[in-house]
Each structure stands twice: as structure tokens, then as C-alpha cells.
Image (tube, rainbow, N blue to C red):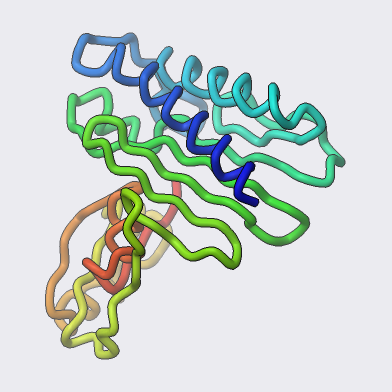
Length: 202
């Protein structure tokens, strides 16, 4: 999977260059059917990712947040979120990332998260470990909730999905809680900077 990981990194960095062209310069924002934001940058980034990967792996399928699924039935599928954290992006907050994964059957073989505004690159491949900026990434050894740092996403969605009543108890029992949403909270868990990340999805 070394070649696939290299291509995913190349695609993510190319998308990051596109995202930074628009970042903090103003970009029109549209609202999708589910109420989430989308911008021209999201779409341009996804097109860039698909182009880079298709040049090397033309028989693979894609499932992208902005352009849906193509080449259904292929043995392998690339899953793309061109800008995870679009709300941060449109507000000029530098915590957003391009997410790319390669799915083979029921398994994820390769994963990349690139945050172009900070330069952080998180990579992983099946059987090869995870790395942040080229250094091994290891989860925390904390085993008890009373010592754990808990991250969480949009609180309104906890209420909407019926999870709110149990959330205050988690807050009371955990050592620390912080609202690091989107890719950032998950990256902190992967690096051992936090122990738990709660995200309801969109």
C-alpha cells in the first residue's frame, strides 16, 4: 500500500493548495439540503483529489462528499471529504482538513488527513502504523474516565439525536472536556493528546 499512500498524500496536498487559495480571502457559501455549508473551495478540492488519484488508479471507484459515488462495483473505493470543518474554513479558523481513505472490501487500507493551514499531515496504512508529520502516532495509555480528556462536536446535535441527557454525566466524570470538533478532535485521540472524541455526524 506504499504507492497508494503516496498518491493519497499527493492528492491531499494538492487539494490543500487549492483550499488555501480561497482561505481568508472570501468565498461564496451555499447551504446544502442537510443544512451544512459548501463552498466553491470544497468542490474544487474534491475535483483535484479525484484527478490526482484517477491518473494512477483509473479503475478505482470514488465516494466523495460533494460529487457522490462513481464507478460503483469496483474492487476498491476512495472516500473523500475535501474540507472537513467547512464551518471553520468559512470563518477563517485554521482547523480544517482534507480527508482521504482507500477502502478495499470491508477494510480501510490507507488513510490521510492533511490540514493545510497548520501543515499537519496524519497518515496511516494497514499494517504500517499511523504517523503525524512523519513521527509515529500513538494513542494514550490512560485507562480511566476520571483521567481522560474528552473532545466533542456540535452540542446541538447531541440534543437533536437524544444524547443530551447523558452528556452532563460524562462531563462530570471526565477529567477534562473540550469542544475540538471535526478532524482535530479525532487527530488528538490518534496522537494520545485526548482519550475520547464524541461526534454525532452531520
